[in-house]
Length: 474
Image (cartoon, rainbow, N blue to C red; front, side):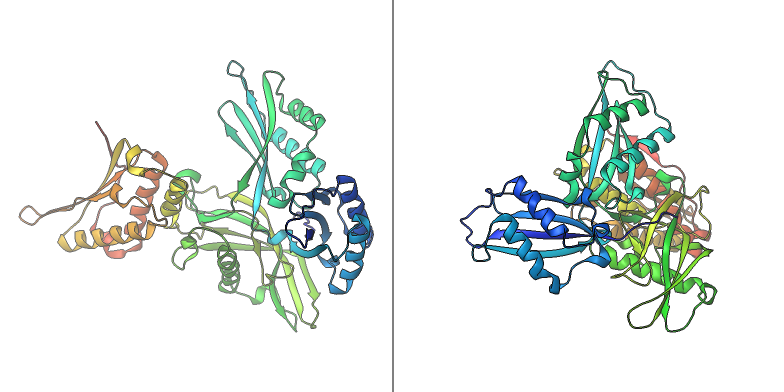
């Protein structure tokens, strides 16, 4: 497992007491002097100089110091910090206020992605780099930037037309500083590793907001119902006596994991319906007995740790943490792997997947979704009698209602066309879905069949939904 150090951002803001006064007069040289004066108050091994910097705007100047969690200053240290700030900047507490805050990088919710973008000219052929070359490039970037504010699990490549992007996720407060550290020499070395020759393939740097998300695993896009996660230093119990991992059952562990995710999901925008009981599914929990650790906390209780892995039907994107402790040390997600089987072991299909996927498509949409759809998918099933048909209509309508996770959810895209002919004993169900997105169309078929499967009566008295009929609009 990857060893992840615990670091925090110590943010020291210098602000004029008179709002009409600006701080533009603080030069970069004075800012660096202040940074040196403050960091000299701490053990040099507790500070990461590569991620400590000064920045200023007309209204405020900031020292961002990256420091180990257990070395953060308390209020007893503040007078010395204030003296260092005022003396190095030549300011006074009568004219300027100094505000000291700190935040754990592990618990950051506002993230950005630093992007190194490679684009080929229209007449150039872009070679496909092997995965090993991409991994080498990401490692080179992490080495150049410094690893203490970046978790490698959130660094990945993505394809674009005639190009490739290397994405490096880090807290928003560090993004400008990170971009400034990417040298032309490093970009040249990345070109060489990827076999991207200039001037046919050029590179540039960009930054975009990185949004952590929690959503149901999409079987139509991933090919499976689950993802295997690996957690290092998972705290499974805190007590005044020794507790073996084997003393816990799967329900105890799944309750810890669900509680962790639900608490962290409350900080994120959007729905977390995929975490509801009946939606989330966790299985194949395994641990490494060679990684057991115990540690006493301040009140004499013993925290028990081990490395853990499990399958889950929830797709996590972002810096999520696991274990009994939320405010102190927690297990870090260090591995994420798509399960190879179409139906992952011990994992059910997450019925929130369709709604989660649709919500993504609707994000930022400033026109009616239905206007852009050029076809209708028609899903059909036969029922044994009128009661089964009515029950199927009821369950599908309820599912679509629960899938409306955004205010602009286009309910008008759906149309019900049940047919009940008692004389000929014909009972047909048809659902129309105006949509040009093949992934959404396939996900809805999977969801409809899961609705049948979860209800014994429907499973017996209705037919499976086969591939929908596509009607192209004139």
